[in-house]
Image (cartoon, rainbow, N blue to C red):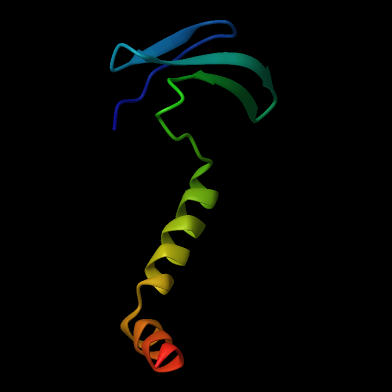
Length: 72
C-alpha cells in the first residue's frame, strides 16, 4: 500500500486517467472527489464487497442446480 499525505484541493493521479482530489477535511472525515473514465467502475468498498458476495451467491452450484430443476 502506498500512503500519501495530501491537503485540501491537492490530488493524486492513478494510471494517467484517474484523479483523486481531497475536497474537504472535517475532523476525522475526509471528502474526496474521483474523476475517472465512465468505463472504470468506482464503488465504496462496502458496496463492492456486497456486489462480490451477491455474484458469488448467484454462481453457487446449489443455486444453479435449483434453477436447472426449476426449468426442467
